[in-house]
Length: 422
Image (tube, rainbow, N blue to C red; front, side, top):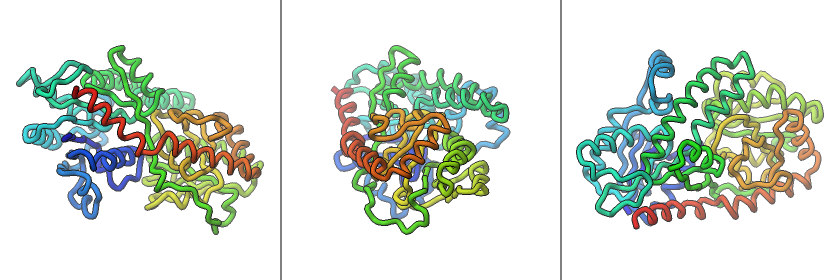
């Protein structure tokens, strides 16, 4: 098939959740299909990039910008949510029109809600010109009609903002964040519903997300294709670590300006780490990931806290830790960071939020703790009981291999394409 992908940024290098998912989708589909890519970025970013090998055609638009004043105004007064306006780009819209005019695509796949508005606008424009160009919502598509549209919803975005609102409203210092999230989740409920109804097929990354998306409208029937991991790239390490006190170390990885990750780091440093160091005085944590916010950078001043910033490869940091921690209290979707740690055979302590969407068993594949003190006690237990930590890590690796290897997941997209082209 000839497939057009719309992505919010170039999928290489794959340093965060969105790019990791997009990169592996393209990598696995490219040998069997003709892939075209429309994204934001600069031509220089394609130097020595495997995307040139995966994609028959790549079109780029410059990253759009908004002033702080404009974003604040739109937050309160624009009918669309912030995520729909974040990548508003007339240049990208024009390039999309050109691609659709010049190519007969069987599939257009929209990766993430940020890219949905440009597609909705385009099909509305096309429908005004020729009503045969758009099919009925989520109904079989004739080969004589326009391409099927697949909306890959990386998060149930309205629930992400709803959980952020519920967390922030409990802290008076975060009431401004709670107000923002309250406004956004109400706008997102309307927008996410409209986006899903405009697509022929909707993909969710977990059953929890699928249920949240389906609750928006009974006509929406999401298909679950979870996030995955490359089990040949992320492998257990049997090497002895030379890092001092590695047996007393924790690690948390992620994009450190992403609001749920910022909250996780602050909560861990404020409440979990002090309780952990009461039990294990030399215990320490590394927060590993690009673009640390000011709040995360400030944590470097705390005893037992390391903030690395960008690293080219997170695997050595994961391998060097005794315990991988996931202190997430808000968000949605399936965390790629957790799957990476599982594939590397690490003992994981997580909140329920952190492992939502992953078919893991508490006590066997991971340790789940939602209270700060319980979280700290779980880490301390794994640091003291090496055999338990080893067993949990081995079980996690088996689960990653059996259910979350990208090679097993991506063909499910092809099943969707085939079903809707019949």
